[in-house]
Amino acid sequence: MLLGVAVMFFACQNETVTEEQKEVQVTEESMEDEIIVPDGEEDATLEFNDESENLVSPSISLDLEMSSQSKSSGPKAIKECKVIDADLCNNPNQPKSNFWWPETETDYTSGFFGTTDDHKLKLTEYNDGSAHLTGTTNAIVGDCVVTIDVWFIGKSNWTEWQAAGNDWKDEGGCSGDVKENLNYYKIDDTRSTITSAGSDCLGQGVYGLTQRPEEKYGVQVGPGGAIWDSNVGAEGLGTWGWITDINTNERLWVMDFNFLLECADIEKCKDCKGDVNELTLEFDWCRSKRVKVYQKKGNSCRAVKIFDKVLAPHEQFTLNGVNNDGSFGRYIYIKIGHCYYTKINTNCWTKIGPGYEKGVFNVVSGTSTDGGELCDYVKPDNKCYRHWFCKYYSKCRYW
Image (cartoon, rainbow, N blue to C red; front, top):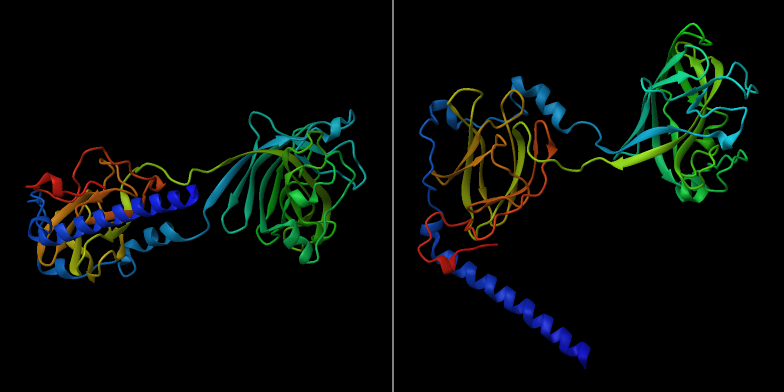
């Protein structure tokens, strides 16, 4: 009985909200002549000429080719990890290290490299299932410094890895059997390099890197991934490779990566920095309207049209800036029909992001030139967003 009452109560609550929203919509439809009107802030410096009605877009503008490519090409970094030297199971004959490059495959007492104040490694993970190990590592004994530029590809969990015919390489370290907790990659030998410099290096110059001993063991990353470290369950990475001649691919020396990881998710969003260069907006109105959007070209006052379409109710559309850096400049200017309606600040002087509203336009998403993806906008309380001149405040929309 109590459950039934609760269901009826919440159903009534939902119905009430829906009815309120419908009532507001009906009221606003009747007030269209008061809502779809200029905001009174038209920019007198915006100049229109015969070319202003020619639609301009980054895809056809020659001076935007570079900015257009830089905005949307390539994977996004999602996690960045600091590399920490592994303790090699506290073996007194082996120092803490992150990289092993011995003269022979069975030389377990030399060839160790590690972190110093001037030489550090980091691992960056991307949303396409790849990871990039970069930085430098210093010989524990001697003056050899190795620059690491190694890519890992094909991220898989244990189930996927095993189903593809691969396996976990149990070296008998101190991490325990952790195979089901790990993610697995393979070294991308087409774009991975090891560059060495110093009188004590086994070789000097640029070398290639390929998986060892068999590709099926791959790169093991996750809790216990640093097989030779006594911190059981700590995030880590372990893999094995051949250092190769960059031209002939001849196998020259063996190497290992074995280290702990201290990871943090990369911020998925940032406050607006620089200038806005992309916005996706929702047309939040109950009837279809023709919408045109303009911006000033570069440092001039000349208006250029960047969008022109009849939008259906609640249709979303994306705008891209057409300045040389892909930005909009200080404002975008919006017309509904042939009349000016409002402008939106796009030079980051005013905070903007998903949740920002200006009249009947809502920001769904966006990016800025120096900040990347925009964070959610937090609306100030008690402000009417849809009516410039509200005669009847009880009829304004506040959500």
